[in-house]
Length: 337
Image 1: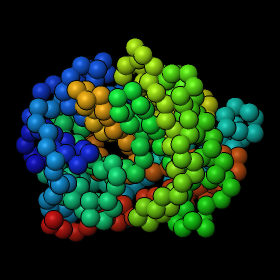
Image 2 (image 1 turned 180 degrees about the vertical axis):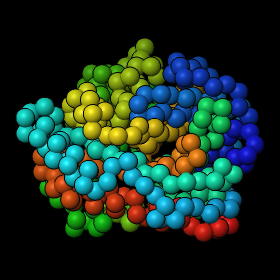
Image 3 (image 1 turned 120 degrees about the horizontal axis):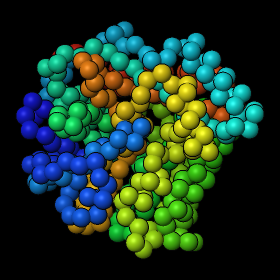
Image 4 (image 1 turned 60 degrees about the horizontal axis):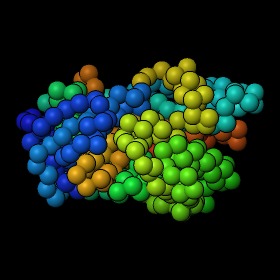
């Protein structure tokens, strides 16, 4: 489909018949079914579609880049050095946690459709918030296999489920992972309290272990009831970018990220999902486990949360762990699905 009209596959539904595109979140408080993509740097694209129907994931031919074709914006030595820099900032009391990321790139033929990659991921890495978005005029061509809920809305009820703590098996999870998760849960509670009615923000499920292809992760769920007169401008302004992929305090962490990372994250660590304005319902995922096309390359991001308890080499290995399975799937050779 990607060679034709704009479309999106989100929440198990195919959205087609593009009506409108805007960067104004106030549109989400009007009417219609919207697909939302936000970059980590804060550039939002909202696309309203006329036709929405239940559908399987897009399928197609895929011949992806070989593993050795990928290059990283930060190499192993550079990443370890930056982890040490973050630890020095923590020791000085400047920041408590920073999510430190790198962007991988591999050459991609201009004619290659990411529909094929979406099909490969739907089989090899099924994800609760899988998405395929093709908006060529907005420069968006991505596939996401995100396991992480950034924001769900059901009427006035909001929920966020940050993931912090990663290992190959449950036994790999440590006290550092638990502390990191608890820290980010507090940050998310604070973010939601800015737009929710006083006394309604609560942690409903703390430190649950979720299993995903190739790894396990700790997940906690925070909920709250949206205050009267609060709209999408307020909600996104209070909660974005997600705390799990920025750090704490968030403002200081974002400054540190801008100083230490060498490539823009783009849709990685941003958000992707849908908003049904007519039903006051929405589901936006954190843009992790996400591939996107950019200037003749296929891109993919990976990272780790850095705290005082971080071991620099272990954090580098965590970024490798998060990437290994998906880059292997992306290297599928000419698979037809």
